[in-house]
Figure 1 (cartoon, rainbow, N blue to C red):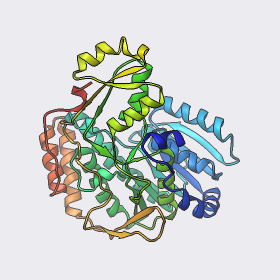
Figure 2: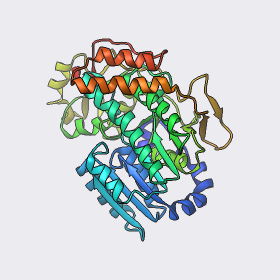
Figure 3: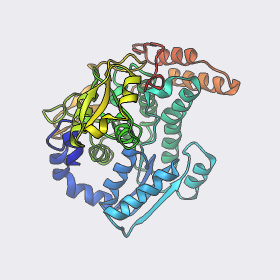
Figure 4: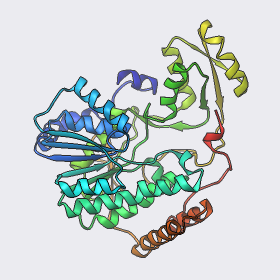
Length: 396
């Protein structure tokens, strides 16, 4: 972890004090409880699964659609932690499927259900079909699995949100904001807590994870020079989720407090640190063609071609925030964790309209992105979505 921390421009772990203070209580609760982790083979899901596993749970079942990532998770756990006396099993299932419903019906007995499954990429909103899947995964699968948790008598449901749900400007952030509205509705029947946090450094599919692939494949490094982001490490994301799941009151949203340990950094700055650590000096190129050509010769001279450009794609937020002016905060309970306190506010009529309009689109097997954007504006009146006509898939 220390290596990742230095690459994102930090010197220390974020939650070390809160974890140390709470660890005995965490161990006691986890070792006496059963857990279901959904989306457990993604980067955050794996981090959460490890945090639970190492505290010796009575039962830990992990579900994820990615069979390959699940295999790696098990290898990783066996290689790092070994075994537990409790029941540890993984299941390669799609949460939206009949097979998953049958799996829940066959047992379904869990104290804590943690949902880490999500479509998280801004690039997933470029076409109406992937966008519909994003709504299914981020909103409707969440609603379904909460209902199943209620019916099976779970004591707590945790779901990960995103900092991009605070004053959202892209469809991904907006889908998570709408998900939070559905959570509020269900929170009258089960205790629910969630978390908003920053980019997880080097998580699967992220730009930083892409740096590893580019080096391996001898390809140029590309990064925006103008976008600053907060970063947490995978382990910190797991710690934050577990803390919210175990200690969050109903409707609490946990987030990392801003401090000297958590600061904004550009992707280009991280790229420079990353290359320096690998013994390369960044060589700034002016075009994609130049970068692609120079990568054939420069690495042997200890240089690596880079293309650092300003961002002009749809859905990029100029700044990051974990909460809005209208949200009530508890900044005293933990040292490095802030909490947004929520009352069960939701518009039943609006949620019903959202469900019925999406159902109509699906039944006709025909819908446009414009229709969906209009529906999102109806759900979130201040939605800051701007269409630039340019998407990340159109760039190197």
